[in-house]
Length: 111
Image 1 (cartoon, rainbow, N blue to C red):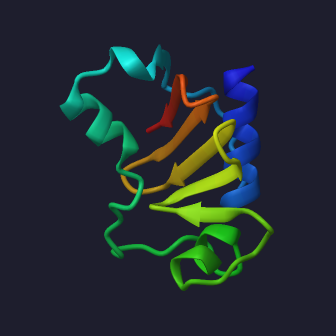
Image 2: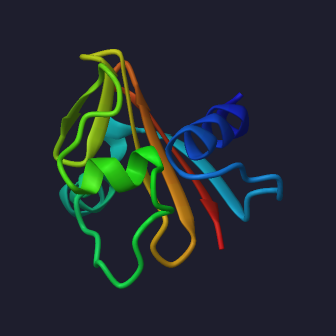
Image 3: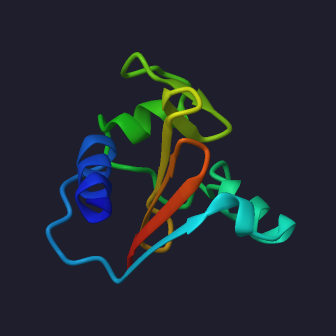
């Protein structure tokens, strides 16, 4: 289910990913140390060496556009506050992070 959600988010924000992910992990947020939590939550770090595909939702979000009804808070796309949020980053591979019920965190990465 996590891999399927991540593929959907990448296709929605960037482009379809048909390869198998290199890493998938899920963990309870309360078990993370403060440093681990800060690293996971940092969805705003993006260097503009390469921009996402022109016209993609990720490209529009970089320039402050709102391509859908979802709020974007600190780089996270909030589908339902307190229930589900995700972040997609394509720097140094494609990385999708998801948080369910502010408890379960999932990370899917393609190199």
